[in-house]
Image (tube, rainbow, N blue to C red; front, top):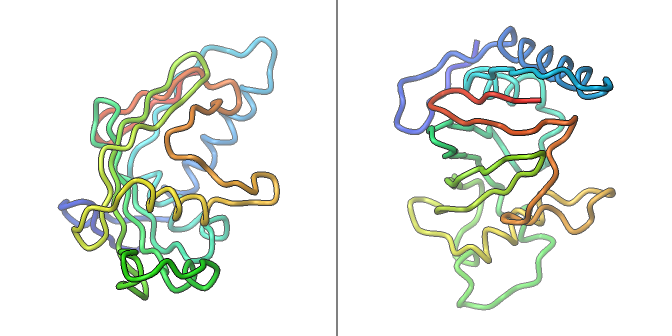
Length: 187
């Protein structure tokens, strides 16, 4: 078992079993989404399951340069996330921006936190950033977007993920309801 702390919370015991439980739920959601017509289904997913999944099951899927991601389900659509970001990895592939660039003064693996609202309905989703910071210092949205773009680029999506762009929910998910410590996936 691996013990990690969330956002000012007591230590949580992450486990392979919790990660495997979420893996099975993802497989069931995907299987249900492939049926026609899709059965109406609500699948609860706990914060512990998500963080255990990230720690054990999705480790190889997390982009290089991002370490120990952690999600906190605050409630009423609010989410918070924390990840260690290897700024050296990011800056190796970024052209220098001069002394006015706040990232030019930071190096190594640094904690980045962000919070915001996840709005979902009718198969669409959109994240509304509330705040982001590194070492407790507010991070302007354009710099956060640059980091998100860099770490989310893939061959299928070379431009990466745009923070506040609307997106389609996968596998015929209609909405995701965020409450304290739990998300419910509605198909």
